[in-house]
Image (cartoon, rainbow, N blue to C red; front, side):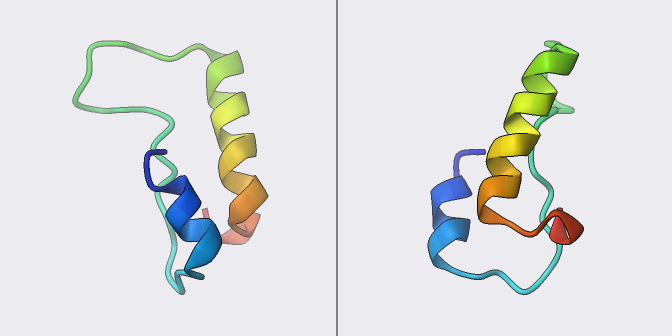
Length: 50
């Protein structure tokens, strides 16, 4: 999610992993947090590209 603003400016042509769940962290985000982060990603990237 750190690069989200960059994807709003640069229209990346490939699929993007949104980063709502860090597989290298022991922390598991809540469902509500994942929904919120996906909503942010969808605001700058077409849903089919996520």
